[in-house]
Amino acid sequence: MRKGIDGLCGIINNECKGNPMSGDVFVFVNRNRSQIRLLSWEMDGFGMYMKRLEKGRFELPNNEETGVDYNTINFILKGIKLQSIKTHKRYIHTG
Image (tube, rainbow, N blue to C red; front, side, top):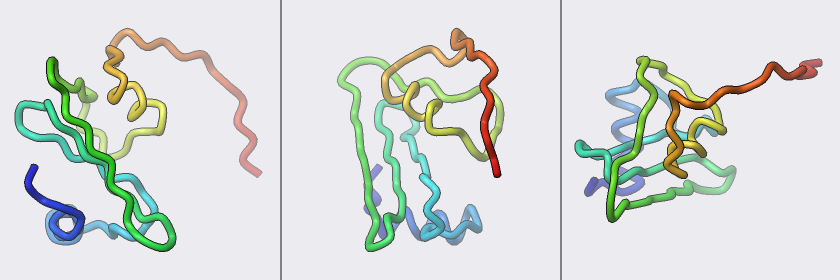
């Protein structure tokens, strides 16, 4: 977890074939999952959030999803067990 904004942008461009300026939030964790970094483009520059746990580990989704929603990222940061989350169906207006 030594990389800063420029190094993480390089990983997104070269290894993930993504665009760091897309507005998506990119999530990076270290090997033992005690540190997490979130990187996003915010219209006028990059924003990076970092959190280091003094005890415990971040739980990540089991599947190899390429994208997770805002709520899942929030659960990861708060230490909520992802397997125990039950959500109800909601209507979402898309047009």
